Image 1 (cartoon, rainbow, N blue to C red):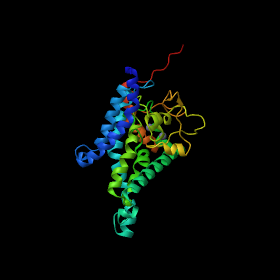
Image 2 (tube, rainbow, N blue to C red):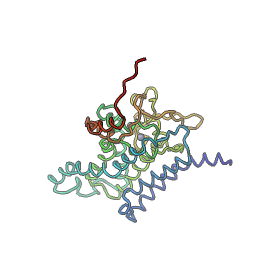
Image 3 (cartoon, rainbow, N blue to C red):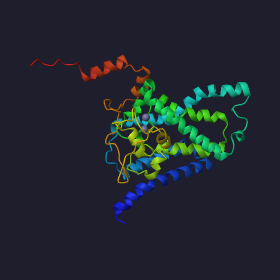
Image 4 (cartoon, rainbow, N blue to C red):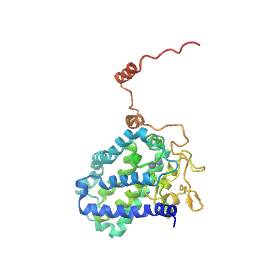
Amino acid sequence: MTNRKVFYVSSLLIVPVLFLAFYGLRFLGRVYAIDQWVPKWDTLLILTIMVVLERVYTYKYSVSQRSVATRDVISNLVNLYVTGAVTGMIVLPVLTFFPEHFLERKLVLASPQQLGPVWLQVLVIILVVSFSRYWVHRLQHSVPFLWELHSYHHRVTDIQASNTYVSHPIDFALRNVLIFLLLGVIGFSPLALLIAVPATNISGTFSHCGGDVKGGLLNYMFVTPEVHRWHHSAKVPEGYGYSCNYGVEFSFWDIIFRTFYLPVKNGVAEQPERIGYPGGGLADEGNYLKLLLVPLGLYRPLPWATQLVRMVKGPKREQPAE
Ligand SMILES: [Zn+2]
Ligand SMILES: [Zn+2]
């Protein structure tokens, strides 16, 4: 086998191998309580490996994200470490109100056994999480206010590890936090949650890998980078309305609801030439404060800052008459 062929085969194998490895590591992390030392260590590890893959399996339409690097770092840190905690502080008291006041316990169910065997609970969690994320994401493209919040995620000019968590925190919480809080107060078996939650998180995070890694048959089950790139295409495929491939972790919901799009030519998945705001027109937003405040109507440049910029730039000169 030539070197080129070996490289191509490795690009096909790397995704399933990594999915299995990440899944196994999550359990190992639980056993050794690594999260206490480095919170979200498994997500950080996935992001780091995604960056390495982007260097090894370089993608033909890759666009440098250097000009928005500061925005990317801030956005990733906020959504990884702040959004979930703040949403929990606001939403959990509301969610636990019912069981605490009417049932005098913290969880809706008295015992996890009421939900059936663990394997059934795993299946239910996986289906409920992915189904609700698919529909929330679809609404985020069709309801104007939700799109206002979500559109910042679609202004990026390439999908890369660096912009995996580039999203308005409210947009991120609606799609990625709320459903887990809701499931948390129902009273599922902790073992079922431990098995099911990584299955929903790993491919969701990995879908933003900017490397030319192939999904193969996994494209029809998981939201791989090849599948998610079409969701970010600047040109929405004809007949797909707002967008296609809304699934966050599993692509089978898109197949069921006829929103799946992945053209294949000679056994190879084709990819969009340009990533960006659907239909074009809006450039990427590098200012995190604008991303955060403009959709809420709260962004106003501070008068003293505007004056300072004017002083530095000097007064506007009149154009000389010709
Ligand atoms: Zn979207
Ligand atoms: Zn995305």
